[in-house]
Image (cartoon, rainbow, N blue to C red; front, side, top):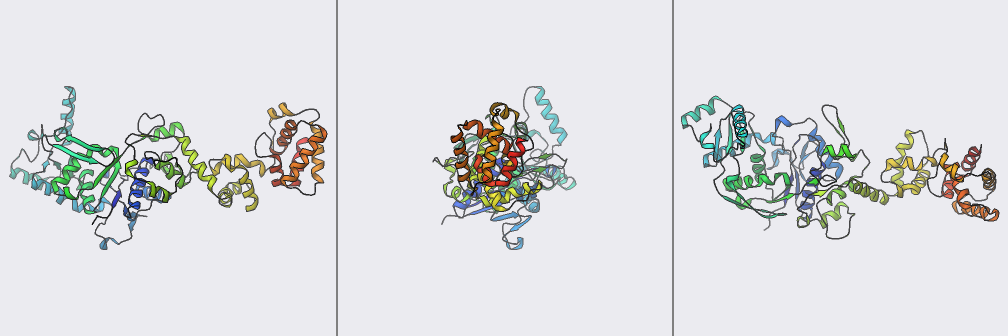
Length: 513
């Protein structure tokens, strides 16, 4: 019987969640959902020095906004579904699990796969500096460990005394010498690494009684029965150590499958996408606005006016190809179409203009009443009170030219307020000596029209132009100038029919004055 699919997204609360992290969470979510499995949110907060207040809450809120809801794990600061005491997998914050890791680290020592190391930070820094002066790089590995300050070089009595008297020690993994580590990545295929090229990583630190990422990650994945680990490419160099840890613990037969996702790249493709790129080029790299403890504010996709569906759709296609021409997917369609086999190995260039295009497509799909509700706060802030029908009609005229609801006002302000100035360039190009008389005649005709709908207005103006031999372009541009204040917007008849007869005539006559 196949084991249940259980995947986890395990961010560290060291700052805001980058859009690359959201993509990792999304791919995990899609992978689990397609297989009827569980998507778990685990907080890896063992790095106490880099912990940032508010970061965990940000991660939870960001995933919630994106619609990527965990089945299990941290949710709104609590454990989802099952109380801790009834849940064999809980708790889901590594800091709350700190009591379990030491025994696993010491188990590796007992088995000969790890050792205690007492080297001070200053001693290690000096060794690094000395190596640099000779053009070399110091690596704590098989070539030096037998000559350093650790349990491999001191007596059992000395070891016992040091462990009792001090907490300035760590447990390091004893990487074997000249072993070919064979690994499989679901995206990258078969990988081989010689163990002699690797260092002896720290697994557990006595000073804070916390594990490093490597030990906690492997132990937690085992205890939470994680079936597949889908994570960023930056963790690929750690894969050999993790393989060796599974082997050392005797867990090779229940080791999860691994998949490492390619990086999100700068728009020019040269390097990893960073906050600095967003600041420089004017686009967000975080899902939500982030207020750093120091006061700096970074913009977010939500606050910039993106729909979460559009954001997720855009992210999904950064590194994954559905194999068809389809670009617009809702979350259910993404679930059905997604597979790791179609995740690309190379980095994916981020295109901020394409991100806007996705939002525009989702905006166009929304019904007018919903868009009117979203636009209403903008109007209220400007003291404008119009009913839903009027706002919906206004939105219908300009939605095709907008990428965001926040652009509605600049595209439609003339539908709510009369122009206060007039574009001199338009006037210079189209206004003639005869224009005032022509527009006055049109205004008088509008006053006596029986019906004041779009079709009737179009018909009347066309009739007057034809009967009098006026130049259509000149007349319509000057009429638009008086209605709008510049040469923009939908058709003149559309504008007039919405703002009404009285307002239309008032604008024409006021403009002529």
